[in-house]
Image (cartoon, rainbow, N blue to C red; front, side, top):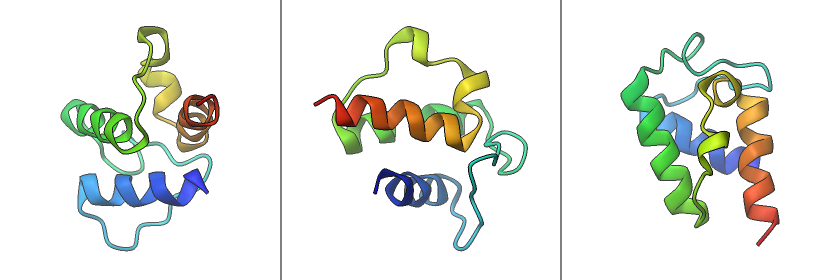
Amino acid sequence: MHAESIKSIIRRVKRYDDVEIGPETRLTGDLRFDSMDVMDLVLTLEQQFDFTFRDEDLDLEQLDVFGHLLTTVSSYVDAK
């Protein structure tokens, strides 16, 4: 459920129409996100799903891989 919503947000941030996003897709490598794109994504996810990332969860190494990003966001959303 969350996966498709997050993929849609990623596509919207980068203005990609039909890019394939899988569990191992890297935002900065495969999708060419820069630091501003990552910041935009984080803020959009927080707003869309009504939560705030804890500082320790804002590790780019972890958030860069879609599967890890999905797990992190889902943990916040499912905890509500």
